[in-house]
Image (cartoon, rainbow, N blue to C red; front, side, top):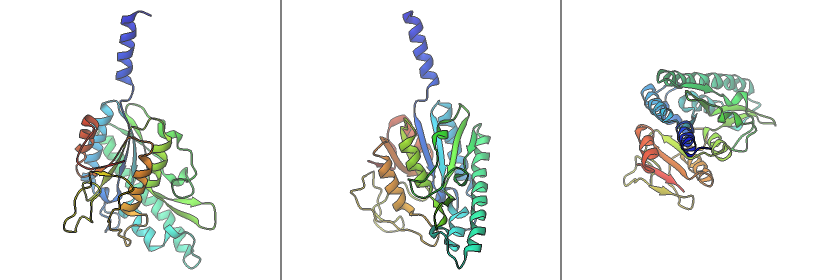
Length: 280
């Protein structure tokens, strides 16, 4: 083939092939007020979705995951959905399972509408319709996360899923979804956890004196965090750190950054560094 034609084809491939494949988790504490039932923080959602649209325009590939925040955790906590079947309250539990699933679809709709405003079609995938079981070893084919085009992205979220044993149901965390997606979808280049109240992993809880940002973290380092058990039915920052550590075995760029400043995602993609915690 003519050398000039080969060069032209290579240039065309660079223009059409994704530069990066990025998996982003919008934490529930970022997009909702976790202390109030179904309190969505739309301005934060809009800010992240605007950045997502900018990334897509650069021909990068994106998969979005989001947490439940006050659309899931408060109801789940009230009826102990994280513990599964409880004979004394099972009827209320089953009603709560349906309620939480409906609430999660509602929360997801706020993100879909925001993406649509910025010209991106979000394709929702509620885990209750395609997954069962708990933890990162849950059952479910995730190959569809590879399906996208220039104007679409796949989205999923933490949810109440069926469990095919005596538990009957349980909570599949968005962090567990992140592990499966980042380790099994080919060619993921970046995994980014967007936090709602800190710049990254901190040496102490954010409200304690002397708390400092940990810029590079590995699982050998202990972290001192606070798990809001009255609001959170998953593992909070501890599960997030554990999940990020596992992902870092497969993905080179694993970060926890402040989701209130989503422009830092762009800085990370452009320069390889930003304010936040790199997990190694």
